[in-house]
Image (cartoon, rainbow, N blue to C red; front, side, top):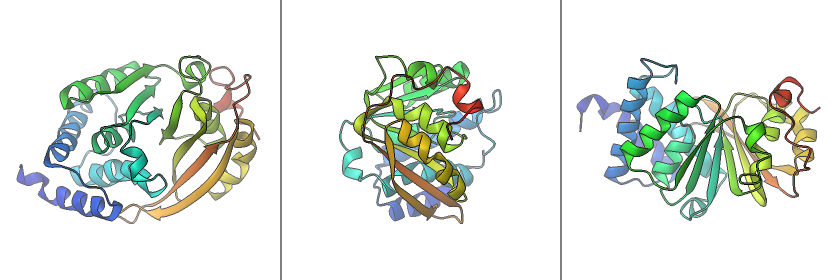
Length: 247
């Protein structure tokens, strides 16, 4: 294995150990290939401001896999269906799919160039049970093919929780969950989002503050459980949830 990755891989192994995740050599190679494709494509389109291997390991790969802090790993070893809203360069969806290949994952993003890149990644890494949606969550959240069809939704998208809830909760089955990855200073944001979460049929059941393994980055995972069906009036038309969050 290329020696330039040695330091980063040591960090990765330490972080995986802290999260209790075991990866095979083949899976590690998939992460390295994903990294190489990411930085290569980043030269011609804006995918990430983070390109150093060690930083990508910590801020993208380990951070994505921290989902196991609020979701039992056994659930991720089954064929549950997960949708990643606003996946961007594939986070957290691609790392979750590499680490837990049994999951069925759908990646949604509004930019077709990013979706095409993720299709290339999927083909190169030999990932299966992975689907791609180019479009806006407000449109697809109304589509009967996708509405309330997923066991779980995840998102690291940069939006306030009230807006994100309207983007994400409509995709989740009653009894399923939505996990939002947030920066560590989101207390006020969570407080003002409770009405929106409730309107979507959800309830914030866990707010876990943690430090990303091998770093000093403060993060929060918010676990929202879907208790009842989302009213048919939600999500509102594209653009409205961001411009006029429910208060």
